[in-house]
Length: 66
Image (cartoon, rainbow, N blue to C red):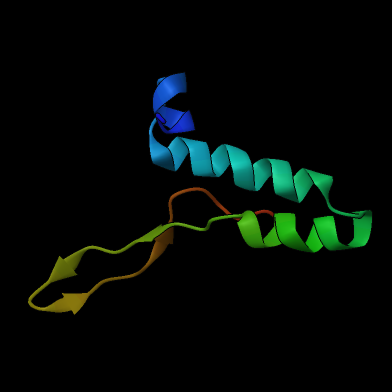
């Protein structure tokens, strides 16, 4: 039996993202909000010089938590 993501022509990572989104969307409202908040990613970068990290900056400024 072929894997469902291979049959659909997508990677396992994309398949798992789709499944996680479906599960989060099926939760009750109070639990869904908390799960969606945990799903947010905040990516920072820092330039390194002489073995030390410089100032960290967000790639995309995170949204305010309500």
